[in-house]
Length: 152
Image 1: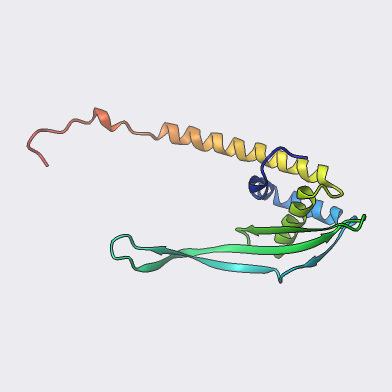
Image 2: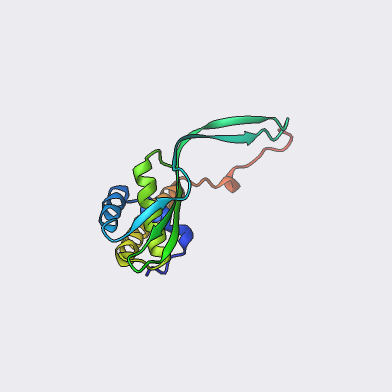
C-alpha cells in the first residue's frame, strides 16, 4: 500500500495515463464492476464573479470526466471507486475509478496500483521542482527600486 494520502492519488495517476489504462485492463481480469451512476465526460465551464460589480462571467471551458463504480472482488466484497478528473476520456475515467477503489480497499492488484501512484508522485515532485526553479529565476526584488519624492 502507498503512504500517500488518497487526495493525491488522482494527480499522481494522471501523470501516467497510458499506464493507468493498461493496468486497469489487467485488473479487470480479477474484478468486476458496475456503474453506480452513468459516467459523464465532456466540457465544463468555469464560472467566476467579478470582484468590482459582482457580476458572474465564464472564464473558460475545460474537459472533465466523472465515473463512480461499484467494484466486486473475487472474495465477494463490494467497494466503491470514483474519479473526477480534467480529461474528456471516458476510458481514462473508468481506469482511474477502478484504481481508486482497488487501492483504497486493498483489492487484488493494489500493489501494482500503489507502485504506479508512487511513480506518479515522483514525476509530480520532479515537475514541481522544475517549476520552483523557474519561479526562483523570475523573481524581481522591488526593494531596490527607488521612488523620487514628490512623484506620484
